Length: 364
Image 1 (spheres, helix red, strand yellow):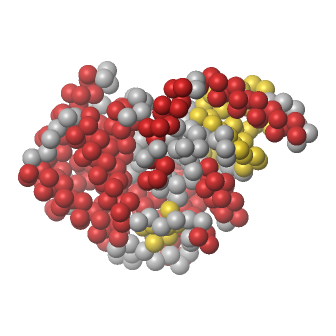
Image 2: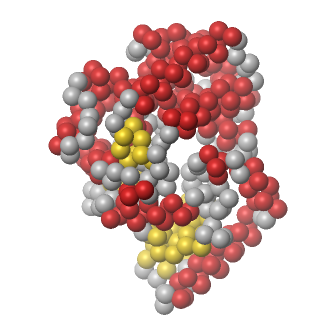
Image 3: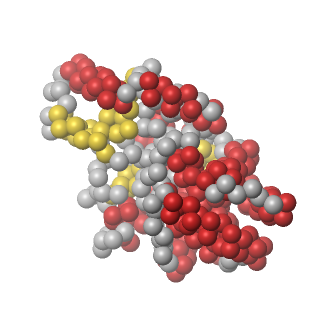
């Protein structure tokens, strides 16, 4: 969510409590039937709730005759539905396989879109199609990067936004979930890390980036084409941001050898597409890894916020593995070694203790 709609999240929670989810679901079902009947299609059948993302949106798979569609309940006070519709058009025109929007009601926050399938990349990674799927994901990533700013449809990823995202770690994980008040030395360490990571993201060439280009937002089909969902928050930002999302995924851990292999493969594809990517392997690896560190710090803050602010424990189980990944990457670079050790000695043990209170088993 962008900064404007995020500030209205608390109001949305109260509104959703006043209007039960079942009432919204019934209203959504009626709206979908009205849309289908107006298009001369049969009413929806076989409604099935499907797992959503970390937003306030809810998704339902349904059948209209022989077609499978997705109905989205996306509260307008928190979700930028107009941007979803706008970017769906921009990306589809660029040959990127994102959902087609069949109908929408911005006032109610309802959308009816095409169904791209059920096989996520997280599942594909456990099959013999893993390699061709990753290759296709890199090719799609290049296509997204070449969109440019979409004639103004893709807003800039501002420095202030990056800084705010880095602040989520201290606000929601450290002070919030762990109730840990940083010492003056720890505040200095956090400030130093913030400035160094800001330098990394600001120094990169800017392209269109999906921003959550990972295993849960990529789908795979029998045609061996990557399908992309949850794209509405795309911004014009650092070239390596999506590569960091993919190769240093918060939900899947690749070996360092795999990361090096696919990093070089993306480098070759980017060069062929005339994208301004590093020609130095060492420089590319460093920028990629430190971009991933920014994402991981943001992610654990968001996962803690889901619990504390939104009452959603769905991502608590992901905090420990992401912290461990963050520590391992930090230890690879001398300027982040002290930060990595602080995470390992102070933050990770406190996190494990707190997660145990919430019934989340230790990842190890």
